[in-house]
Image 1 (cartoon, rainbow, N blue to C red):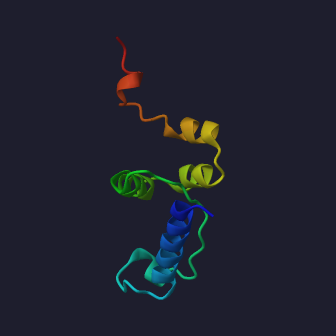
Image 2 (cartoon, one colour; image 1 turned 180 degrees about the vertical axis):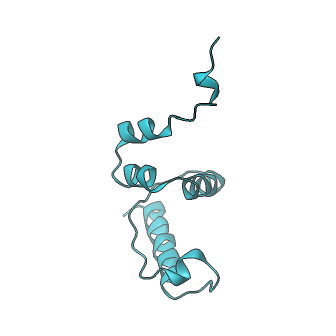
Length: 92
């Protein structure tokens, strides 16, 4: 196994352990155990990973499920704003 893959697996296992053991008592997951890893993505830049995680935290359940299912068409469909005041709904 490539060293980078081993490192990523080690980090993932550590993060799961932190959640499962309530390592951070005030964390969102500390009262929502057990934790199950349902989505995993590789990022070359840790800042991009953190930015993506924060973005996903603001999504609704349907959009998160589409991501978990890797249903990119459904995710794109759910990303479209349906609010009547959205700029795309305004007349030219």
